[in-house]
Image (cartoon, rainbow over all chains, first blue to last red):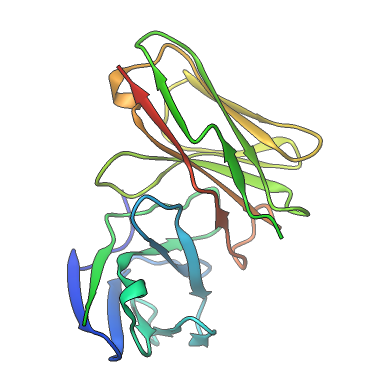
Length: 109
Length: 115
């Protein structure tokens, strides 16, 4: 079973920020938080990952709470092409990458 | 630069047959992982290989096996196919083997249909 809990679906208006939450209350001290997304029928695409500190790259920002029990992926200016299933995963390494059902994000014009 | 490539793209097999799926990682990547994605679900981890050695195995029966070659490409083999093996099989490569601070790059997958 996945170690994370995500809402099954979310909507976001085009051009607005999309904030996708993830609960990982049982995360251990050396497990990373990863975010991937999967656009219909394609392989998952890496977005961002972090351990304790907040992270930002050209795609998104990752905000991890101080107790590390939850995190939020932020897409600052969502576009229609960001419509996808977003997966939050906690893992020590790629021997144990457990994808849950993810959040289906729909960006609407 | 070429990404992760997988072959074939689609495959139809009948129950009881054997199938071999192939994956070529990104140049320079030494780790390959395999995942099964059943329709409507997230990917499920099957195997991870690093430097030609198995480093991890998910909860799959012994009908599933894999190997990694000296050029770091990999094959996933499934024997005695069942209808439930119908899925998208994904391969992912990464530069590191078992540390947590890295990202994986996925291929487009092989769609296997068992009839």
